[in-house]
Image (cartoon, helix red, strand yellow):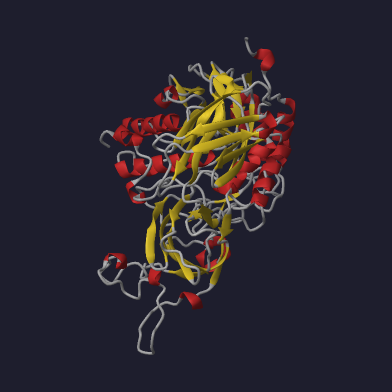
Length: 616
């Protein structure tokens, strides 16, 4: 990998040519949902994209009717067209194909989606965008036979303007979705979760004025909790010297700003009476942004997050993060990719019942519903770029992909008070190329958002070769703000009693989070505390591990692995795993295991405010 840092300034990957970062706050904009039933065609050989010489149809001077994106119909009985979307079966969007269609349970490849719709703009001068919450993994998008563009990455939003192609009747939107794993991709070939394919999040049409509010960033200044700073930005043909009004009614704040030649207006407002967002008081303020032709509403919490020595400071107060890890797995029986507000509330409700004030969203950006609900419920959030295990560190395109996905999640969630940590990676092997790759990601994240903390889930090592003295010798520890690491003493190393013989030598003067520990257990399987896969073994491991980590002097948080059992093709033990990682505290059917109550009891006794220990 040559001079990878030179790519740190790029926000748009070469694979996303022509596509800007999406509208801020798509969640609250006027929109027409395209959710519901779509026609689909399974295309394992990609016959609808390539001709028999494996040349893309879209590159031909005269496009064949057998290109699926043309949605062609026979004009007479002699026409040979080997597909028909209108006769194809239906599938629900949002949703993964794996849990909707039994024959697609293990499928990795291409599926084509088609949605027909009519649309009339509110005003002729308005603009319309098609917005996808996410699609896994590589997608090509066409409207009325014309290509809108391409997106790579399975967990972040993207959009394309459709104004010139949109008609009032008989529009057809066709999306080619390919979830094949690739060595150079992010994540790469080797993961430990189900590769759910499809249009897995909401799809909608968003209509805006010709010149519209495209982006904004409104937060407290990192080192001044009485100063709201940020920017507002317009997009359109006429963006210079335009008035934008920012109003926070409850604070009696109203500020008129003028844009510069690029359509951006910088923001700085002093305030004295603000209620700071926290787990005990998740205060959200209505924020109104107005131009001559548009009013946009959001609800934003204001808080600061910093570190000082071994402490994590929320609003200047030392805070212990009582956490749990989550995959984006539906809490409902049958599983699949979670994609609704109801599922977000249920997952976070379990976390609250457990006693959590913090969740680690593993190992990729989750849907926006869970972030919005965390804002409302007072749960702090760790979000993670899907740089997982054995990434192709020296591939420049791989870096651009990782940076794009990081850009997209930061862009989407930068106004959410609940998000306090951007994580760059999980369990990555140390090397010079890896350090350069992750170092560039951290630099990029700080450039986009200097208000939040940077971390990564690292791995432990022996201290000076001593098998029972553990440390973090990873040089990336010098880059992060919070030192986080995964450890599985008692599961992958020894049995639970080993935990009491472990000592820790943490040399860095930084807060420590144990980002993973745990053990597998099948709900309803019982034995003694040494019987693998029993609820008793898992519960005992939690008891021993919690006693062990309480001895780590710099410990400021913990996120055990994991809230709920989740699907993984790596988990093959018949009768126990059956395609599930069983480390959840809750089964795939929603049943609480014994370890759930062990952790709940620990959190009930563990204060999250640590002011008495903080030297002021």
